[in-house]
Length: 83
Length: 237
Image (cartoon, rainbow over all chains, first blue to last red; front, side, top):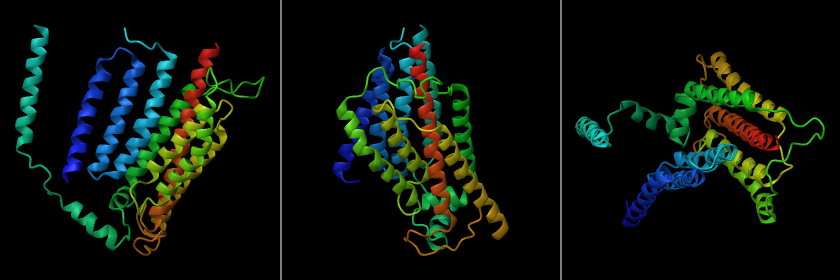
């Protein structure tokens, strides 16, 4: 890997960890779901860098769009904040 | 005290996993079957994308199982959550409490055909470029999702979704049965392989992936439409 790719990978990993911790700690479920969507976004970039474009496409379509919207719909029918 | 105990336990488990995994060489090629796949899929099957050759040809039966699992999940969600549309008005009850803004609506109008085109491209070229039936179907479902959340009136007909889904599944199974007739085993690649890197190549792989793309796309679209309908039904009550 070239040095720019390594830098991009490290920045992506940093965002991945920060978004993961945010999703766990946050009491507002909607913000936590958006953070999980962010994890999927960063993860699909990482899959692409690691030369797995098939997995990156799946992660982009299902992880970012479909599962996020299903979580949002579930939150809309229940309470928004965790007790 | 409790937290300390949990921390010690986690440390112990981590140490155990580390000692086991430290001996495993990372990234070393130890499987003979991968060499077989890498040699055989461009040479004999004329499939440029080796992942597709493995998923649809060498392990086509697994793919049929995955498609069945997805179908069962979609059917379960539909049977539990599906509600008929209102008899009095004939329209779907309103999906969102407020209409999406005109910017979103105009953007959805522009993007929707492009997303469908991208999804169709991904599953038609499944044996040439990365991606395939599952990815293309998921992309198509995101296109329908965009349309569903930006327009109140837009809805997919469940009978159409069911027909497309069933026909695609039937195509998959019939191709497998034709493999028994002409080739000897289920899902045998009985069509001529064609030329490497051309659109019509790889025998049944391209046809199966088109069928899988339609199936996954219609299933996920049906699931999303059902979920969106249930959520506004609860609101009106």
